[in-house]
Length: 375
Image (cartoon, rainbow, N blue to C red):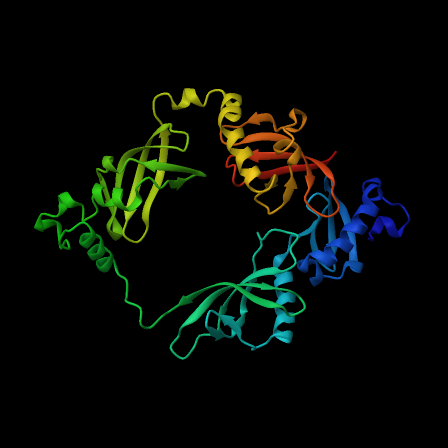
């Protein structure tokens, strides 16, 4: 690890305190993080400290963070890394086909891009790409697991441009809706179809969506489809209606929903009704009675592991398995949307390190990390 300061012999205290740990992390990333093997770790220059355990570095011209808590190198410039990986795969793989189901396809490497939000560290690099179209114009949208040594495996694929597929239009969608509810295909409003709203009825919406939540601003709402009464119409056959529904905690909300044949149902506003505001008035009571039990079950179902939305994994066994009150999540604040929580845990890697996490909890399935501090 070099820098202008270290070259002059004056090592900054922040770097000196973690220098041994950073050297070990760099070696660990080289072995366990395929993304890190796209750069030369001997050309690393320390740029400063962003936070506890988060060191800003530039590695062979690529800026990023060596994160002792995540045990990973988190780059800022994915474009440069994409270009480096593309050059390696063009050289090592080229036009050699990959298996796509029962067929083979050649990857068009010019379309390749690294998936930036893939969890790190990872032994492969997740990328998206398209295949080279065949003579009929059919190609595949691909998600690939790759590495700098030329490894390529298809994670998922989607066939695009099937020449035998039926052309889907607004008319065919409406015809399908009308067939499901036993109505004739509506032609014009002048023919008495206005009451049917183009075949889109409360009965159809209720049968189609049932009690499945419709997402809006990180929350899912179960809509009462019997309240469907459109009062607006827009291009594309879209209809808008004031409706009622409830969130996952059973609180009632006044909703406004747009539905269109091409877009499906979309909530554009949600306001609490009656006692919903009072029920949410005491954040600590809501956190302890509702959020904490559901969060506990999510972590227990994942083997006493907390998985955050950046892909990091933390061992929270002392909270989940040992039921230690000293290691239970501590509510620090609530901003009206997310709970700010402090939680002690261990990094989920071979070199375990105890850390204190500051977490933002609005969705127990996707907890966000605000800060990681060594204990």
